[in-house]
Every structure is written in structure tokens, then in C-alpha cells.
Length: 227
Image 1 (cartoon, rainbow, N blue to C red):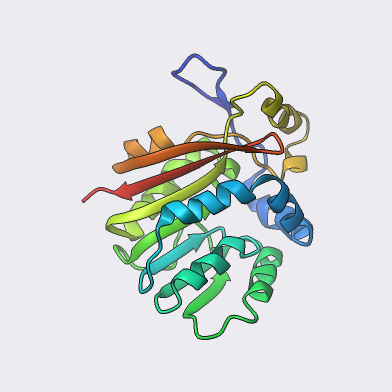
Image 2: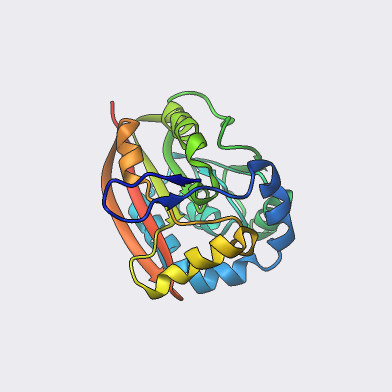
């Protein structure tokens, strides 16, 4: 199944790996995920941290914390704030906890959790960071997740998204071809575009950037919750 596209391109692919299978998929690849991340995602992730403009003393939630690469950067910038990271995969969470082992003095917690039911109160988060998750979420479920993001962000709170994007070069579309043949070979990820959907949910989109590393296409989106 695909999502209609209004800009003349082929429609976006829908998620082909069920959400119930995602923890198992990422438990299996947790031990090697950082290698993939350094090769294909590190530039987009670094730019996302930069755009987040983190100041110490904030309330920050990372949804889909993975192995904790971004979370470690967040802690270094926000040691006296409140930092919460959640993930569906026990294997990825174990890697994240290991990465924080030598962190001292920072206020944080890492715990199992789902984007469909965030474990924080309404209007409590200054910055919500989320990377390489919406490319795993079915189109029919994206609105529910964005509703949760909007619920927990403070008015004016920042949302920073990093996703696998739709390739903008011919070569980068090789990943879409791989996904069509074997979705699990890409961890269930396929290219998405989130800016328009964010606007539909009352977010103000301040920036949307395309990054390509090892031909792998990513988008970085900075948005704010409107008052």
C-alpha cells in the first residue's frame, strides 16, 4: 500500500514491517547498528543536534532513543535539565544504557516506551527529539503519534525529527529498491516526508533539510508547537 503524493512523484511506500515486529528486528541488529549509523546517518544526526539549540535546564524527551548516540549529546548539553529517553527495543535500550555508563551528574532516565503513549504529562516538554522512527510507522498511524508529540510539548516547544527521506538523486533511490525487495534488510525503514503532515497538526515548520551520506537519504526537520 502507498500514500498518495500531490507533487507529481510516485507515491510514498507504506510500512511493510508490523509495529509488533519492530522490537525483535532491532534487538537483532542492536550490536551492529552503530556501524550503520556512522556510515549513513551521522551527518544528519549532528545537524539535528545543532538545530535543536539545546540550552541547559530544559525538559527534553527523546523518542526512539536507539543506542543512545544522540541522547549522549543531549546529556552533555543539558546536564541540569530533565532528560528522558524511550525505545521499544530492549536490545537498543541496553546499548544506550551502556553508552551512558560513565556519565556522572546528569539528570536522566532511559526506559521502555512507545511513541503511541508517551510517559510524560501534557505540555511538559521543551524539546522532543525523534530520529529514524517515522520511516517505520504506517501512514495510518502517523497522525496518532504526532498527536502525542503535540500533547506533551509545551506551547512553542521544539520538535526535531530525523527520518529516512525519499531519495532526491537517482543513485539514492537504490534504498527504495532494496526496501521493495526486502523491507527487513533496511530495518523496516523507507523514505518519508514529514513537513506537510506536521503543518496539518498545527506545527510551525522552521526548517527542512535534505542530507545524503553513503547515498542514504535523510531529512532533518525543525518545527515548533503553535500556541
